[in-house]
Length: 461
Image 1 (cartoon, rainbow, N blue to C red):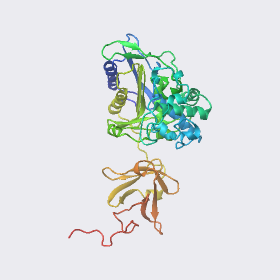
Image 2 (cartoon, rainbow, N blue to C red):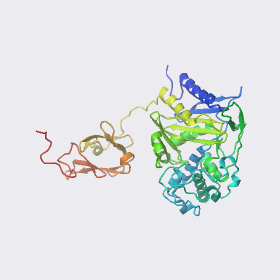
Image 3 (cartoon, helix red, strand yellow):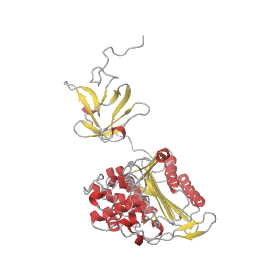
Image 4 (cartoon, rainbow, N blue to C red):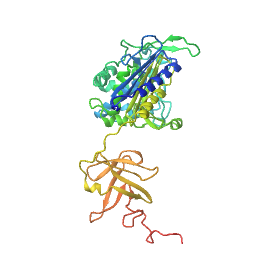
């Protein structure tokens, strides 16, 4: 029996159902709905509910809280890609007079702008947005709590500023811009700033008794770009595909990759926990795999979007309770279940269509001092360089079209790699940001900084 990559085995489906059933029961939440994405489409939906004979499906709306921030980040990066702003611009350049203008746009996106976590009292999530009509009402008298750019400190007001930036540069309300530039192109028809039936009601569950209390639903006003949206597992599954592949109608693949890269200084506890933050996306290392996405919460609701990019698996989990199951763990478990039970089947190996003989000549073993490295050609026309064994500095390099390459990751990101040739055209060595790589350890025929002892290699005696 064979199973296509577009299907899940019955045992995998049962494991997914079991995981959300445990989460709903142990988390004591009125309902929980989930979806799993693989192969660029949702191929499993599951739900558990306390209501007999009725369960939510992929079209029932839940409030998604701070997952809204990822949508706001997409709008800001669209402005960057259009050349309207630079991520290194201070906010003051485009939105003057806020009192937090020294923070750059990138720092606001990555929660490293030094701003407070919350707006001044009363608690903004449980009170009408009309109480905070102006940015000054959101930021308070002292917007900055920390030195700008020095630490990651999650900030809801920071994303209010980014929403105001979008409104200023687009000349339209954040909600309208989001609808026109993201929701409509991606066909997220069940995502919006206000609930549309069918939608779940938000509840608080008593910590010591199995009874519930209805939570208020407030319009967040100025704080909307930080947490206003309602959505469904169906829509967020499509959004997960976008965050994996990009969509040229919204953001290209290179920009969504940029969103997924760490962009904020990590706290010591974050390093221990394997957590980081990109541009509007949370990043975590869990169960040996790198996961990106975002969690969200508002009174009455919890939400999580988790993407295992290398595994080609994403998960969405939504509930309607103020506190309960730890959805980041549930989402990570759903990704792990599929990735381990049905590992991604790689594309068939295929030889390159063509190869530059001058580049092929460089393939193989090189030495940085006495450290052995291998240079390989990559299918995208670039090269990779990494240690032959063990851990060490490694990177992929993109071609610059002139016989040189630029590093894409790690220690060598942005560094230039080139082959240095002798007058007769033969290769002397590789130069990587001034590091010399030779065909033999300390090759006396190459230009090794500091020179090579003329007595050569020798023993002790």
